[in-house]
Image (tube, rainbow, N blue to C red; front, side):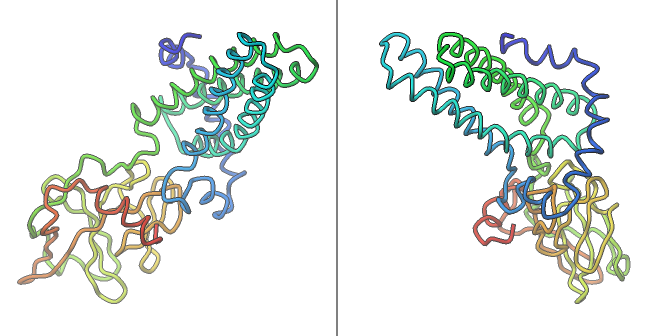
Amino acid sequence: MPITFAGRFAHAQRWAGPLAAKLQPLIGRAVAPPAVRNALDGVWLGAPLHPALTDVPVGSWTAALMLDGAAAVSRDEDLAGAADRVLAVGTLAALPAAVSGLNDLRDLIGESRQVAMVHALLNVLGLSFTTASLAYRRAGRRRLGRGLSATGFLISSSAAHLGGKLSFGLGIRVNRTMGQFAPDAFVPVLDESELEGGALRQVDVNGVSVLLARSQSGRVCALAGTCTHLGGPLAEGSRDGDTVTCPWHGSRFDLCSGAVQQGPAVFAQPRLEARVRDGKVEVGLPGEGGTELPELTTFTQAADGSG
């Protein structure tokens, strides 16, 4: 299937969305333990795990294709053997990539869910071809094996194209505070009396949704109000001590630092400064005005190990 038609093909497969919806509860139960979810989401990495894992099979299969071509032209058995080995590496590496990809499917809805299901099925088909290719190569039928792996490469490339559509076109696994900017001065947002007890309050600061709350010690804390995972409204979530839980998919963040405590989110919530002046709660980020919110935490969290 030509890669230019992959998006239209996926969009036309209306059956894929309902199929994915039936699989999602099964996937959810399979990754129910928090440690398993956090590992597959990439919380420990500070970045989504699935895209990182796909680099190995894609790179290995590309190398195998090039080596196969060179071996066919030169009739060099060493090149042919190298092609077999890198093809095997890519095939083995595709398994953990597939597991992490299925984990990401569990929270999707709408067109994203449909496209992700087609993406997954194309990857399974491509992997089947490369596995068959390895078997035929081992049996001495190298020409057929090369044809099968080349076909698998074409199918997997189409699947990879859909993966790019999911990430860059539909925003799956990107930081959902993108496009929001830190205010360059403190802005009064509500009366201090409106922020009592354990209440979670959502306010608007120059068009940016901000979550306000008092910590258990009484400190006023301000985080981006849009969950970095899929954009859930944190102010509508629940609170346990100084931890806030997103109402959509259960991501948990430290209320004052924004650090991820549990996935599926992997990016920390951007933190703004908050203060009380003359009975008003003010929010801002002097010195960082105009900075896009993800820039506040994406690398600092990775550096200090708290994300």
